[in-house]
Length: 72
Image (cartoon, rainbow, N blue to C red):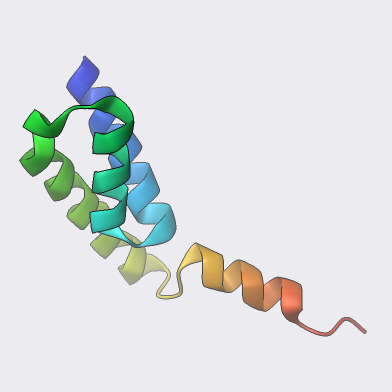
């Protein structure tokens, strides 16, 4: 059950940020679980690729672009 939670955390963060290595490292540091590195990296890469196919622009860039656009 714990590995499923770790995979879900990594997958969500990787999809939202489109930064799979960063997502994997953050989750490993938060949970002290370096033994699941390969599974976490696989989940992060898979969801990051799916996220890029669905929406090529990362969440943070889209948010900054939307917030910095001039309002009429």
